[in-house]
Image (cartoon, rainbow, N blue to C red; front, side, top):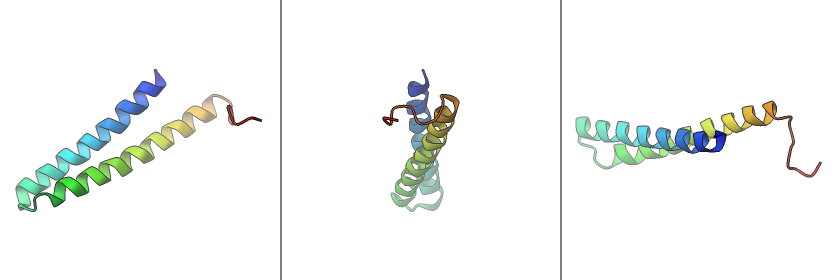
Length: 69
């Protein structure tokens, strides 16, 4: 279930960034730059969030599992 949650977390942040970018575009008539920047910020935010979650899961499961040690 944790892996599914990571995918949902990443997808949600990307969609949120895109939607906020579209809103900025509609208010400032800067189409498509708001959507592009919002999408990229969503991807960056999602990647950082997933990285943080993976680090938390790794610490909870005992560290360097799966690295051949």
